[in-house]
Length: 137
Image (cartoon, rainbow, N blue to C red):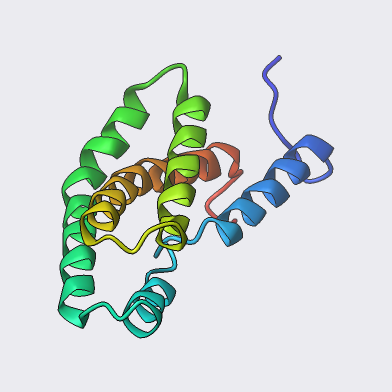
């Protein structure tokens, strides 16, 4: 018959714990406030320059959120690979400010970060819905 996870099922509990951990560690705002403090106070960026970077990154996120979610819903295979790749790209672009303080490099990196975050957030929600048992949980 069909496999339905139960409360005592070890695989279900392990998947639930893993998703909780991923949800905790994959920070949806990409440490933007720490990046702002670091670039403005430590690297002496103008606040307006960080505002431009933040505006463009968040605009890209708004534009790509729905198409990325739709793409992930339509994919039959490869969701894990695409999601893993997006998480790695977002992690690298989040910490890229350690390697460079160049405005244009950070601007391009943060735009790429915005695009990649629009992939992994819907993917995590899809995984969460896939292991949920009921409306109660």
